[in-house]
Length: 377
Image (tube, rainbow, N blue to C red; front, side):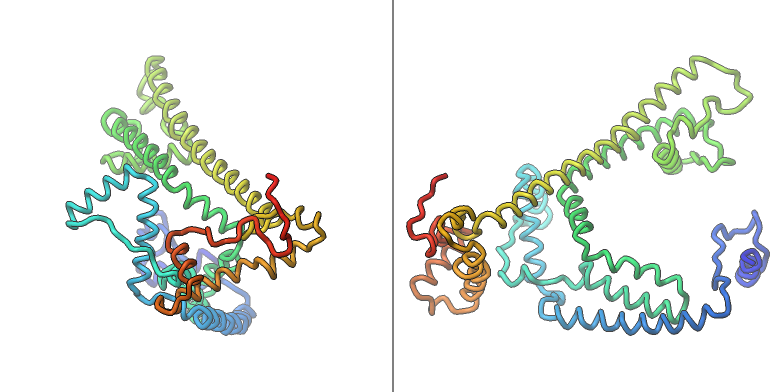
C-alpha cells in the first residue's frame, strides 16, 4: 500500500514512477494509509485539542500580559546589563569586546542597572510565548491539514519540568567551556579534512557516498564518518583492490586513524561529558546547601532552627510571622513605587542599602522571640 502511495505522489508531482533514478530522495506518504474510522476520530479529538490549545494560549497571555515585553527598550537594557555582568567576570574578554565596541561603535559598553520590575518581564520572542503560539498553530494544522503536526505538541508536558530546567541551566553555565571544546573538535576535524583533501582523495568513493572533491565535501564526509563511526573503519586501508598490501601504508593509516579516534572521538566526547557531570554535581551540592539553609536556618536573621527549639520557640512561626522574607521583598517593591521625597528616615536608609546591594538593614542574629540570643558559632 505504501508503494502505491509513493508511486501516486511521484506520478502527480514528478510525472514518473518512484525508482532508484528518481530525483525524489524523500518520498513522503501524504496522506498516510489509515482505517475508515481514523478521520472522524481525528476531527473529534483534534477539535477538543484545538479548544484546549486556545484556552491554554489565552490563559497564558492573560495571566502574563502585564509582564510580556512588547519590543520595549527596558527589556533590551536588562539583557545588556546581564551580558555586561557576564563579560565583567571574564575581564580579558571584556577588555577585547570594549576595544572592538570603541572602534566600531565609537563608545564603551554601558548598560544601567535595570528597574526591579524589569526582572519579571517576559520577552515576546522568548521560548515560552513563542512555543504556546506555535502549539496553537500546530493544533490548527493538525485539524486542518494532517495529524503529523501533533508531534510538535508533545514537548509541552516537559517545558515546566524541573529536571529539564536543571539540564538547560547546566548547559548555560557550561556554555563557554563547551564552545571551546567544540571549536577544538571543529579545528581537529578541519585539519583532517585538509589532509584528506590533499593526500587521501583516492580513498573516498562516491559510490559509497564518500565525497571529497572539494574541501567542504571532505569536511562533511570526515565529520560523518569520524563522529558517527570511526574514520579508520569508514575508509579502506587501500584505495582499491588494485593496490597490493603494504605494511608501511598500514602503519601510516594506523597512526592517522588512532590520533583522530583518541583526540576527537574519545577525548572530545569524554571532556564534554566530564564538563556536564562536574556542572551537575556542582549544582546538586549548591541545591543541597540551599535546601539545608532554608530548612535549618532563618533566611533573614541567620539563626539556626536548633536555637529556637532549645528556647521553646516555633521555627516555622518565626519564618512566617517575625521574619517572613516576602515581607522584606514587598517592602523593597513598595519603596520603588513611592517618590523619594516622601521617604521617612527608615525608608531612606533601606533604599540606600538596596541601591548599594547591601543587606545591612536585615536584623542579623536578632529575633524578637529570642531576646537573649548570643551567637555561639
